[in-house]
Image (cartoon, rainbow, N blue to C red; front, side, top):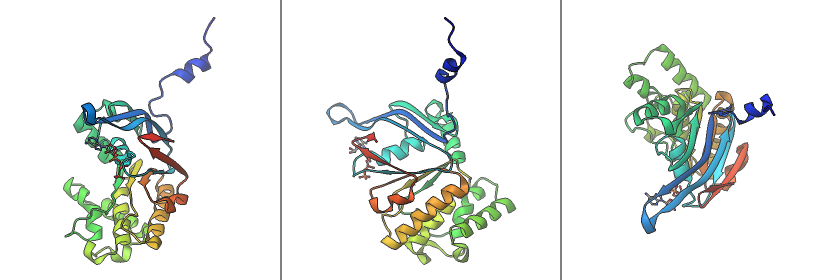
Length: 239
Ligand SMILES: Nc1ncnc2c1ncn2[C@@H]1O[C@H](COP(=O)(O)OP(=O)(O)OP(=O)(O)O)[C@@H](O)[C@H]1O
């Protein structure tokens, strides 16, 4: 009997599908021997463009490992990680770095701004270092600073900004290369409740405005409602 065409199609390899981010059966083992830990255990996750997913989990549940693997900083022991249609696990380190710079934006726990640069310069630095600092980069930086409500503080340095304002600059900087995937690590841990709410609402808004597939890891359960989907990580398993 012939196999119907639909069956062939449904089983055909689909490297990325429509998802901007796709993790398939990702397992990460860390350490060795008696000390070996399963940091991620068969994690499968798809995130569509414009979707904001929050991953909550207690300390040691695998949140940092999930971000490291998704961001191409760490290669999983097993499984596949597709970002913008490319399987990061098949790339050599140099290609992976290039793919990461082009397709992934990162918002850090403490913004990680450079002390000597103004807010605007933080956004322009990669273009400057890459010899691409032209009118288009400047216009994009200004547009993003406006989008995150920081246009009037564009000339301020980090010590002249509040924690929430620094996070806004960090978000604008992450959006500069128009990434397909935005990875966010505990963005509210240094903020009071009102500022945490502002930052997470802004993340949701910017995810939609820029059509990024956003994954935020956090242990802060009060900010979860801003996400489209909330997943829980426990002992390396995602549910
Ligand atoms: N280099 C390593 N060698 C062995 N085990 C490790 C290593 N790094 C992390 N682990 C373990 O892997 C598990 C997952 O760690 P991970 O840092 O991803 O958790 P986390 O949820 O981010 O924790 P936290 O919220 O405290 O930062 C933990 O049990 C941790 O102890």
